[in-house]
Structures are given as structure tokens and as C-alpha cells.
Length: 253
Ligand code: FES
Image (cartoon, rainbow, N blue to C red):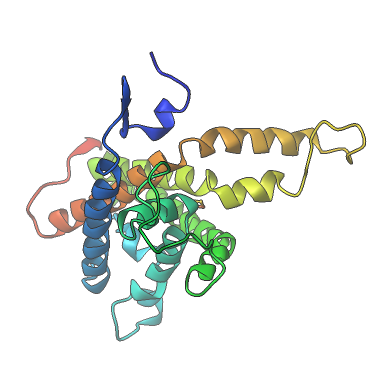
């Protein structure tokens, strides 16, 4: 039986109770470290195009337009970096994983440490998350433009495995971006009550949007992990195509 809250915490919950508390932070440390190292390498080693496939690390290709003398992805990579780095979900994970601050909800802070919120440098910077959301939406628009181009081949429209991978990546990034806590606040925040007779009337459409985002928000952590994996997968796939290691299977010519 799936209990309340179990699905949101999958895969760290199991029937009959939680997994040992250290599994989640350990998983976070390993997965984050791999992702950060791979992303650094990918940004410093630009890829070209394969057919119309573009790596998500190079989208939008501002650096290519400007012909900058350094890896072009550097001009864009800081946006997803700060967007993910200040994400409320990631914060929870890296505070626990890298800082043991604390390891989990039910574990105490280490001796001599106290949780003081995010009021001091550098953690106060995390409060800029909502602004990174606006920039991330601009990047996301470009990811969708690239995804649509991935269905266009020299012979005309078609569908390749790369097109589908890019589509899956764009969908996951969209779910991640629009299930964001900051977007939820943007849609429905600054209201103490939706149904109070004395409260100013809230447009029903706004309430419905906020409800939808709230539903998606329950799975924000899942979208965070899945979109992180899909970004790496698409980049790796395009690199292997360019290197001639694998062929691009065309499903519809
Ligand atoms: Fe995670 Fe905004 S809270 S992206």
C-alpha cells in the first residue's frame, strides 16, 4: 500500500519504514559529485552539432554567436548552475549530504553547531533563487527551440533516438522548472486565504494554476534528479555520435 508522502520520498522510503538515514546523504554526495565533475568537463570541452542535435550545455549558443575565445558554454552554464545551486530541494540535499547539517530531520546537529537559517553570507545568496528562475525559463525556451530542430534532418522531418532523448530532456526540465517553489509562490503567494469572505477575490484561474503547481511541486525532487540525469545522457549521447562510437538510429525517416 502506498502511504501518504511515500511516493514523494521514493526511492528513500520503503514498505515498513525508512531506509537507514545515511543512505540518502551518501547517495546525494556521490550523485552530485559525479554530476558536477561531468558538467565541468562538458562545459570546458565544447561539442559540435550532430545533425541538428545540440547538447543542453550549449543552449543557447551565445558563445558561438559571439565567437568568444573561451569555451562558449561558459557564457550560459552559470544560469543552470545558480538555478540548481539555490533550489530549495537541492539545498536540503547538500546541507544534509555535504554539510551533515544535520543528516536528516530526526537527527540532531553536530555538537557545537546550530541551525541559523540563511541570513548570513554565503547562504543568504540562496534567497536569490526566484531571480534565477526567470533566467532559467529563458534557457528553457531555447532548449525547446533546439528540441524542435532535432526533428529536422537534411532530408526533412524525421525522428531519431537523439530527437526523442532531447524531447524527454526538455519535458523533464520543464517539469523541474515549473514545479519550483518560487514559481508556486509567484502563482499563488501573498494570499493568506483563498476562501475567506473578507479576503479580496482571487481569480479562480490563479487559484487553479496554484493548485496544479502544488500538485507538481510534491514531485519536485524527482524532477530534479531525473532532469539532472537527462542533461548528462543527452550530452553523452551526442558526444558518442560525434566520436562515431554509436550510430543514430532513425525511427522515422
Ligand atoms: Fe527547486 Fe526552484 S525550488 S528549482
